[in-house]
Length: 611
Image (tube, rainbow, N blue to C red; front, side, top):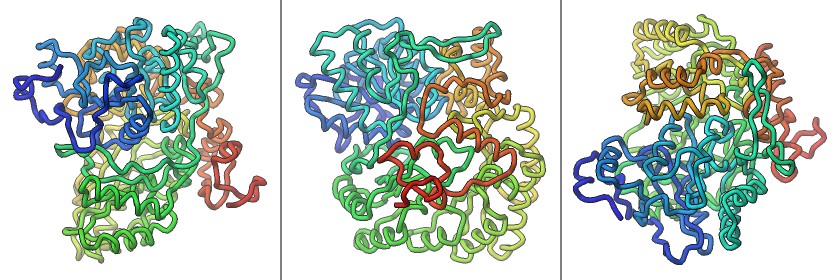
């Protein structure tokens, strides 16, 4: 089966659906014992820029008698054509219907893709509700950062992989292989998967609520089911992917990528990634250099991105960059360095790179005043921000982009106006340069497993007032402003902090027409309001309510390694305006130090050896 030429001729970007790209796997379907579809619930261009997908694609296809293929969400025009023609969702490689695979793995990286997951299951002819599936249907697995609070999607997913996926994905496939050989039924398959560390099977747990309807915890349905699920952490980063699939059409990140390190030691209190990807692990210089060589040879890329949450924290990053530039001087290799710190070292590092035309520089002060930056544990003086931008302009950069958040805990209107004051000061002190300054303002979203998981989100009315203050002030400062729709951020918070009752909301939203909610031209909050009303749920109770520090949270059964006691301590330090030092300077005993062989950041104060 395949998509017909007539179908493809009717839709935008038909290259999203054709497959056959360079380096794509061409496995033997008939010889495979386990067939896996790796699915990203957004369009091809976004999914092919995701770093996890090629890692799992290579890990699974390297296993004997295992076949892994890809699928992405078809855009609305293609979905309409498929439904009209009665064609189900197909994989890119073999053009097989997804219902014929043994396992389907969704990558959940953003809450506003949840309705796409349900829509893709429906397009594939697979029951949306896990309870409606039989032995004839594939197992539906999900992983990614959103799986750290799996409860809103618990009605639809058979099993969640919690944490780093490289090892647990292979173990799940091997367990399914044994189950198939043994003729195990679906219930037995799920029980065996639940025995794998890091795997959470929602159907083996019951959600409990008090008479007032408040969530009070999960209860294992069977005595042998573990009460808590520990996040999987790979002690050493696996070999870098050096033969990824090369898209035939332009994608969001159209370049080779090398993950130079995973995790961050900075401890920004709003940042979920800084918690759930701990501890910091990095590749050696030689491994990065060899990966770059292979990417250039295998894929023809002339741009390589050194990926990390904090690239300038990578040990010897300046030496690594110089080595890459010198080694590939003949092919004019361009290097991309995301996640730069606001300091002179970042400017010096960028100066060592080659560009045909200097790109814009992007920094993230996050908050408008020194006080609020200290509250969120990202203490950067105003002087440092202004001096760094001035130094960049003196070196010839002309385009500056600054990322800020509004709605952070303890924020006042003075903090919001501080964003304007920073831009005005930059304008005064760099008058001769006349830089183009763009300000991107996002809304604070309290995320699970962070010190701010108990905090309330500002109401849409409060956020709109703050946005209006910025709009007026930055117009005077001659800076371009972009911001998020408050209702989009409200929905993200609701889904990020929800319990199982939100499954009904997600289902009703899909039925109301909600898909591609992450796309502004597609987002309709009215669909979600109808869904909340139909499910009898007040959305503000999930997003705009400050939660007591002792409240049992829907994700309390997920152990990410960082202890609840540490998160509570950090929340209290937030309210005090007290900083916590970088893990590399002083171990804060976050909880990971108990996982021997994993966390290598040590200090003498907690009695552990400094590496």
